[in-house]
Image (cartoon, rainbow, N blue to C red):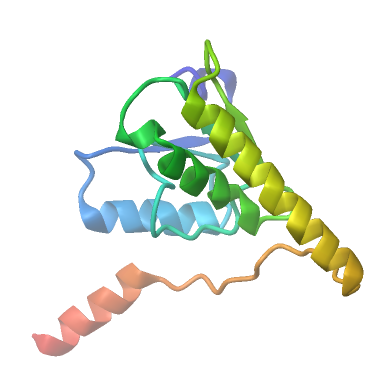
Length: 145
C-alpha cells in the first residue's frame, strides 16, 4: 500500500498467490507492465529477471538463513544482470554477514572491471526472451483435452 499510495505501479508476490498467477505477474514485470515487484525471498535463488534494476533488502542485519553471507550474496547478485543494477541494504547495524557480503561483491566487481578493461568489454544488460509460460501451459492443456 505504501508504494501504490505514492503512485508507484506495484505488484506483490506472496505465498497465498497461486503458481500460475505468480508466473503471470513475473511475466508482466518482465514486459514492463508495472514498475515495482515486491516479494519475500523473491530473488534469492533460481529466478533470473534481467530487467531488475534495483534490489532492496529490508532488515539486512537480522539473523537467519535469509540474511546469511551466502543468501545476501545471492540476492545482491540478482541486480548484476542489469547494467543499471543497484542494491540497497537497509540495516541498523553492520553484521559479519553484511560486512562479508559487501566485501565479497566488491572484490568480485574489481576482478570483473579489470577483466573487462583488459579485453575491451563494455558491460550490457542481458537480453533474455520473455516466454509466456502460461500461454504454453494453456496450449498443452487444451491439446490434452
